[in-house]
Amino acid sequence: MKKIPLLIMALLGFAPGAFADWTLLNDESSLHYVSIKSTDIAEINSFNKLSGTVTDQGVVSFDVHLASVDTGVAIRDERMQEMFFEVTQFAQASVSGDVDLARVTALGIGETYSDTIQLQLSLHGVTQDVSSHVQVTKLNAGKVLLTSLEPVILNAAHYKLAQGVEALREIAGLPAVSPLVPVTYSLVFQQD
Image 1 (cartoon, rainbow, N blue to C red):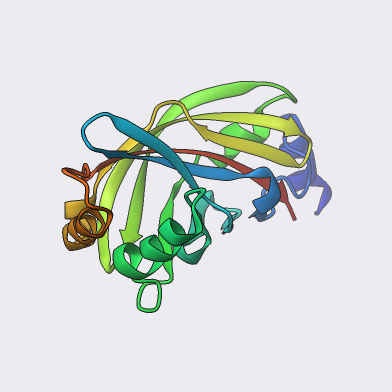
Image 2 (cartoon, rainbow, N blue to C red):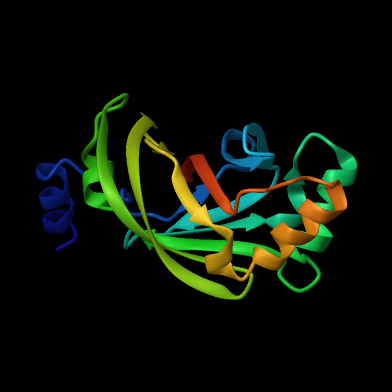
């Protein structure tokens, strides 16, 4: 009896175990955002710690560990952690959504496809729907790259972060800090 399902999977182009869970590889993944201050000064920032999975049903979930924010300036990192993200109360941002895992596993090595996926972002106690245009690339038999094809624009006010933006503006003595934040990501998942 086991031979029939394996034969069907082989005919469909899937190897046994093709639908096993996948784990995000932090060292090969990245998430960047751009902060814009004083109208025309843009700074690229990132997070050093990401974790996540894709289940065998195609449910993607990953966490951004907010204390790992990296602005390139230690005092700014501390201010972002304490005054903006409030990491003692909100340690992580969480993202979840679905990918077409059958389509992913059907890719040949080096092949890609693009899609628009719907995600839910939970940040600072608020959950909002976010749409993201992504490219999926099969790197090898057990590794997939999910990357944003265009920035996702987040509005800090939608996540109850407007006070944090204002506090940062004041302490830095800036005339303005934009609440709009472009975010890009490149996530590598390894099959378990």
